[in-house]
Image (cartoon, rainbow, N blue to C red; front, side, top):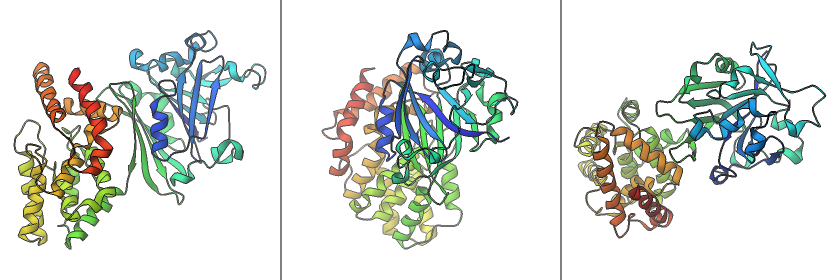
Length: 436
């Protein structure tokens, strides 16, 4: 029998900022519910086939009571200090029939609903708090089958219909646990990966109304304890690539896309990675009208960190040279080659940009300084990881000098568009980071 995923929960701070972050991405909160006697409450975001539950603690006494303690919900709610897994996976189906031993949990808030002596089957292996809590959902219907007053419009306004795959990232041995291997054949499948950075993550592959995977909802824990929430447009890289070359009236050299994507995916990259590239492209797309030469700006973004060796020098120069070689191979004029080269060199951040396109490109590259606190914390940790080879005391001193340099500038962003959106938050982030 195939198990169907009913919902995924993750613990957040009480009514935390992650709820607002999901709303800002265009997702609709479907419903909220308190769990009297269990000591938790939630906010749920439902898709046609399953829902995401953001769960938080409301009563330590109830969560640690004799009726609830074995669920390890309290330990999971304190995952930052207990090293417990903050996730839960609820299924529709028979765990015991799937070869997963269970015990019966009778939630206090469902005591009046469940038949006498009945309970929710919970995987016995979930007694280990390093593993997600895996259990059978008390409900047997997909959100699309819920009554209209409960399901609302689901995520139709955001253009999403269903979740087609799930990836859980864990710092523990969970990736190889037999319990979770059982879920790889569920519908949709759940895959667990081991994270080297010690953080947790959840990625939901989202399909549009036609069933095509178009976006990925990505949540990752950070050093601040908040979850960084982002929505990845899976079609953006190819759309941007085609648009840049079309704007230049050229065709990209054969194989260049693959070489660039491989370069951005090199294992020593933690911040200067495909994540950073995607974020830059996403920032440019709504601001393309600000560019005098949009094709040149967009292509410069593709190349600006194409060569990246944290222990080397001249990364920008080598990246710019690669761009010039590629443009020459494609038949671009010398003027185009020189302008793209100059744009890439502007990302050295050692001088004020000299023209509007350079200011736009630099603002995009520095937008991370004005990211929300969770993403800024993740960025800070990623940069630190890239410089692990530097003694800690020296890295902290140099890093603080770099960040303080940006903070001392009269303005961080050269364009009004980015200044209005990022200047205030950037100064807050930098102030906090330089005080540590």
